[in-house]
Image 1: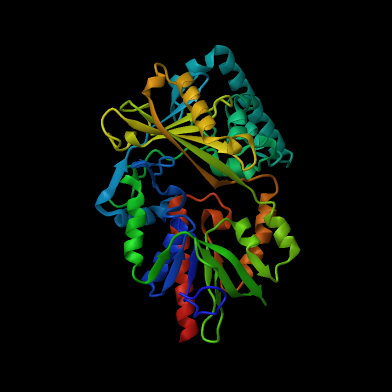
Image 2: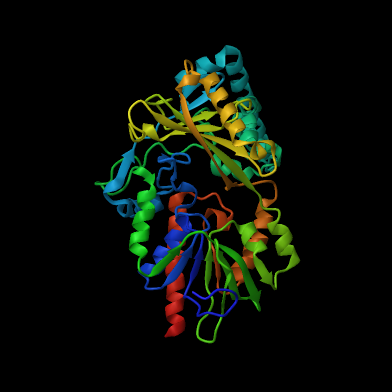
Length: 482
């Protein structure tokens, strides 16, 4: 490989980002007979779902399970299952919610929710919900709509009382902003809205379907993962895209030069090496596929980039996560894979425990809990020393887990994810549409996936979008050469 800025022959396609989107794109190219390089800035492929290893311990950043987002995507789920091979596990999911100082099954069950609310709160919730429905009907008859904010949309659906009790503080805690500043699109995408006869069902903002019923009779009911998380999915993709795709880790995109509406050169850098610049030549058209965060991609574009594209890209924000992993000398901490914590006074939003998917994953009488903390670069928690994050996490765990003693704690580890959730603040749709319209117009550049499209997509949606985009690109390449 030539170093520096010496022009080198252009590979058919460069794919930046080795998460599920980038890997699925590379797989689509390989199956179409197109060679590519798959470039990932981390030390391993898999993106945010990859399992980390520290001190010989496998750390799962949350419990990632596969399910079909829509009926049309069920064949995609089956395809991903086949890629995982014999390592695939079918999981019946279990979740709990810490709400009003008690643990409730999630999705919420009426027989548990009513005693938790008590007569007074229950009366307030019911009356408020009824008033909200009447107001919604009045506005509909008058040809008017509520303000399109998370606050207004959810309060209109559930009533102001239950919204304030359940959604308001938790949403502000997770996304780091006043729900009045969050777009109503976030509510429509993430909150199952109640039907006329289903007002208090499925209330949690990050609800996932409990099971997947596949149309093929041999397909089992459940969600999917592997014995070591989703690493088997990434290994299956890597195996099938070889030898057409060359993977390269610890390599990042530095810049893309755009002139006359087309990619003319790309500069990348592998850790510990000089930059490598690849140029267009007379026999090959530069093609770049990117699943890196859309605003970051725009900052790496040079040349003919309008100012209004850059200013709109700067408006697109992401919410960050800090993962605090705590080893605990117990077979399990909770008997659920996920436990959500609604109180704004607790540091973490959610605990996940892989031992409840694979018993004894960490050996006898030992589990590792992953505590997810919402943060933002520059804020108090993002800048906090790791030892302080661990100390407070342990303190808050003891406050919500009866009988958990200090001597039960073992080792701990801290990792962070800067681009965890795209933030759907008020006006994000316009900013996103401006940026995507420009990026999509650049000949030789494709942006895809949750990060690249600034769209809260599930893994099956990312896989299908990316694979299909690669197949379409391969056809275009073949037609251009015929």
